[in-house]
Image 1: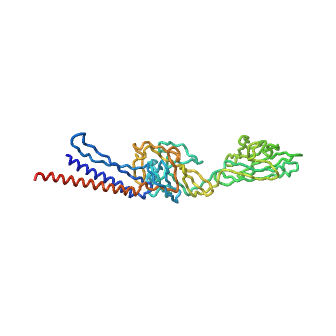
Image 2: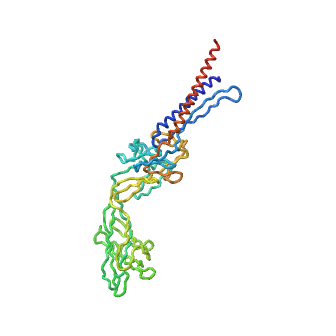
Image 3: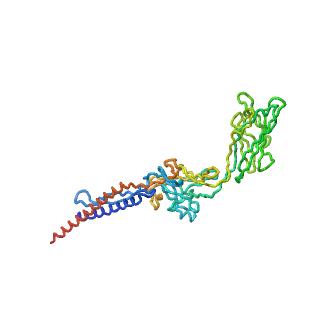
Length: 433
């Protein structure tokens, strides 16, 4: 019985070392595979004999585990949508074959790196057929509130490289100076005109035509102007008329003292803004608060538009897409504007090594890994997303070769034990002779 147990233990040793060699060979074969997580084989002794009496060899059993939480070093690339996770967390992806079916039920897979490029339908896809997943942004670039404990809100990221985009102008600020000398009794009474371009709801260029006419008093200075606003989309129609009075005191001379609404939206002294209705809808025009010097002023003898700012943009073509460290997908247009179109979350689990490993360096959660949660990149326990980068294999070739030598020696030793047991059994057989 003891000799037989020695034979069985040595056979188990051969099997265990063969399993370890298989793990080593897999690691070495994938030493150049981006995002590969090495497999580690562990040995566990089997104890059969009880205390006292003859000893019975139990042998050894081998178990393997993929060390998903180990990370390889990052290398720089030239593609803006080459992504790698720096720190904890994983990128959500889906199989391109499931995305093409478009049945709305894409299984979420997880990976730590990928080289994503747009395919024929505009999906950000790797050469192995993994599609990057994310949350779609609203038209204003904000990200809606999605559930974080499920992948239901995720959708394949699709980039329309031929997309046109334009934003209507909804607000503008006027920072300009009116000549104080024009409100004197000796003033000429000439109006000061200002044309400001804006973009309507269809991205077309229109103009607000603002006219400042001084009030000429019989004597002294009136410090008063009439501001008339017209819209080029509706020629000849006044959309706003206001009487502006400026302070001539020593402390706040040249700043607005009062604004009286004749027609149009009422001036809000708290914000310094008024609302006028252009052809495409309401537009906020900020002319400055009472007593402030950052809007309309009346100083010296020069009409000077100092700072005119507005939102909105004309229609432009998408030229590039980049993903920042927080997972925001930004689309760049040739008009100079940038729009957020998606957010890529990072998925974290209590036990990443408990996930089920699939092909193409992808993984799926399992009961052993625990429940997953979708974090904003850089928030909570997660790291950030690095663009223009790939994660190298976590395999250390030198270490694997060293382990292979040890495995080979252990295998040879077990084989030698089997040979010795065979010789002992032969001796036992020869006793009968």
